[in-house]
Image 1 (cartoon, rainbow, N blue to C red):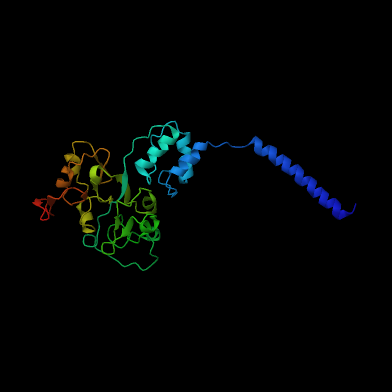
Image 2: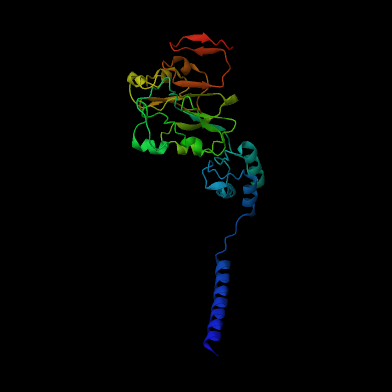
Length: 288
């Protein structure tokens, strides 16, 4: 037997032995996946956005299949219909679900937040945030370069070319959380949509103290606490000179809107009929 033949036979024997070993090892450590996981995954939107808090739709399907209850497990993109299908597949009850939507918590448009300098570097919010405070006197506000817009897979968010603030289409927003993660200033927040998409929130994240902050932004929260004192439902908290409204506790009574001296509190999608002018005086809305 020549060397070439011997080498070939040796390799064949090694290959056969290795195949046998791998077969028994694979049988020993085989992982059996619940067949319902594939059914659940097929019922999901398959966008793999991570808004559910898991690594893609497969990870969410595994979590649903392994959980004793679906409480706290929500596909933000698919919404109620998708979660009802998932519950039906798994024979479990769907958990409570409060639809959310992204909101921009910076009201500092150009007319109320004057520019103090010009930036000519890389047009990325993340880069600018790590270099300096921004183009205005408010170091907490929106930088306007659109990292959030780039992050949105659903065409639900765009930077307004006049105000340089993000505008969110709530009909397209899936609450995937991508824009929240992309914003280095943490001005984008997921909030409950509320009945008839009505929402009230503090449109400011400035933590500076006192009325001097209005020199950098005319609609900043000055931490006066009037809204906190007015709210009878303990929906408003004060921290670091800034008011925050808990959407789970807010009854949408709008009393906090009336007492805010800087118009820092926003009310969205309410019927027309009354507006408040800059002096705080209630006036009739001409469009009513």
